[in-house]
Image (cartoon, rainbow, N blue to C red; front, side):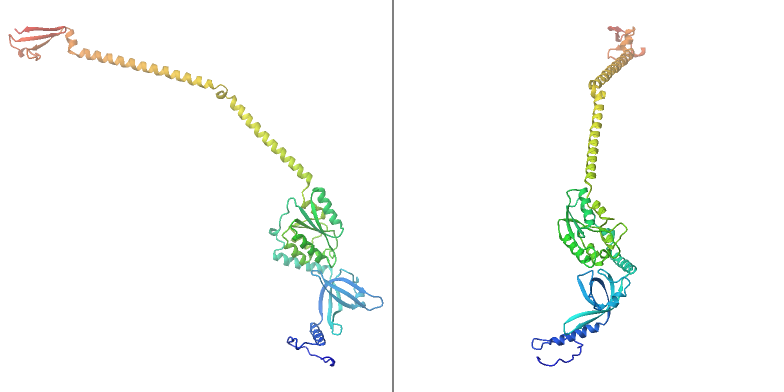
Length: 414
């Protein structure tokens, strides 16, 4: 193939079939790539301007257009007239939409994008896009309250993602150490504004999340315009925060600033100083609270002991415990009274029984034959012992026996 004149190639509809024995020449590969890229046609591309190169005397301006969510960029060329036509010009960090046509140069093997339109993304459009992203993430449940984790009472190490030598870092660190001097920090200084902010903040967040000693992470920066705070509403960063297992505190800007990071974070602090108050307790307040609890506990124990002492004194002052023999004396009197009463009752019962017995004996005595004999009467009996009750029961000359009170007499009937 060496030495042959180059010939035109048509773009195949199917992938090339190559092998070590039948390789494809470089020129053909370049021409095929040029054809494939030409098929793409002109497209609209959204990105952030990271570099604007404008050389004096040249009518071409070179731009670097970068995706803020990932570390990827494209080189774009446009005319000076196109840049000058923009109302506010074009500077690094600007968010733009560019209409470009990709071209591949087979001779140099380079890819180039030529822009014929550049439109800056206005604040209204940015707000509309943020509102749409907010609705999407809300529907996915990333902002739900039940997925937010509570902050530890006293974190061992606090991770801080902030700008380099920023006032926000100073506010968080100094105020936190003023509240709790023993707190430790692991600080990640990154770009918090511009095209590199999202990737650097996400990478720092990942490093702190992987550190087992970090108990809470604070993302902080000072206030700024909507464009300055735009990285903290980036979808990739919001999802990275939502995936963190370590509690995250958002302290972005001032109280009026509300990037999407505030909604996905576990705790939103209105300012960096407020974040310091939320991540660690105040040592003075906690010491006063401990002293107050100690005082309350001491008072409670003293009150309990005092009440029990009073109750014991009251028990000891009762007559039953102060003079226990008094109760015995009272019971002794009761026993003696009952004994006397028993004696009286028994004596009365015996007397009544004796009287009854005497009366009964008197009645029996008065009814007995002996008592009749004592009054002068006699009992007449025949010889066979039968009692004579009528005169005709005996005959003249019958032997009779007379029983009298003091003995018996023999008699003969006449």
